[in-house]
Length: 161
Image (tube, rainbow, N blue to C red; front, side, top):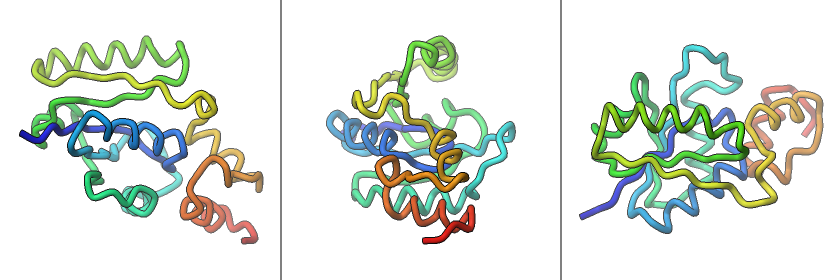
């Protein structure tokens, strides 16, 4: 039986921290679905299609599928037959929200477990919003994102290549 996990997020854009969690998730699942969320509360820099394309270009592993979804994560996870939801915890401040979400998802989909992963030590400070902010002002994000993402950020902010 194939063990499927869902790793949800907005990925606006995908960072080295996301890549780290994707690679490490593949150590304990056979297939990982990176689920790009449509979040009506956020105004993303990259369109849904752009985010999906950036993830596909950044993580070219045949065990990784990138899909977008709307609505409840638990319903999406059930639809794709996932056994696990993967979430990243960068700091203690993330825990309370993530814990609440995990309990709600367990209530909605009791057979699906949530697994929390802590990113590599050198990536714990990293977030998509920080990357966007640094890129917006022309800062060097080469250590924070894949070169494909770095070029996309430069195009978005019309910075010299």
